[in-house]
Length: 158
Image 1 (cartoon, rainbow, N blue to C red):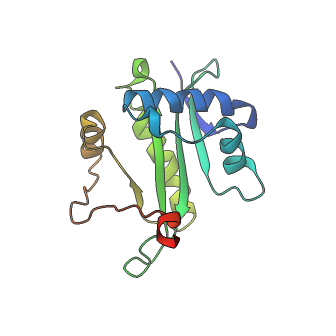
Image 2: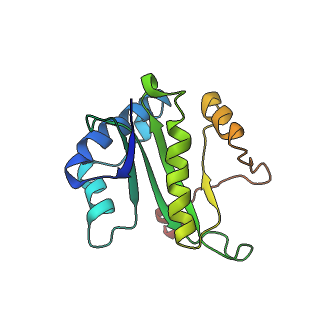
Image 3: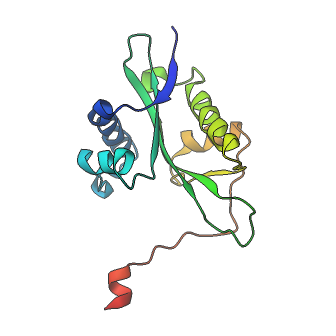
């Protein structure tokens, strides 16, 4: 079977949203999912869009996986270029172990390289052992020297 990786089309927002829900259910964080199909459309195709999405499709153009990512200027004091932050990467379970996740990351890496970006980062839940194993096989470096903290703007300003 042949697979293709390409940018999402506007009319495919709902399909990718459904896969995102499937990912959230798999990770047991569905209660944290805040995005809506309408907001996804704005973030990917709106006037101020700064989010990108690649989809993995079958020969029948069925979407079986995706990755949402963006360019970010994080930690520029210690790095010479921006990075690509991968928000989500997902392949339907029946299509895993075919190398599609790696091919999806390679497609994002090509976009990074074309833009002069030399690093990509993603967050992986501590109990996502399959994901951790996958990233380790790709020689991803676990950044165990830092913790991520989230601050609420509203609580800081109240």
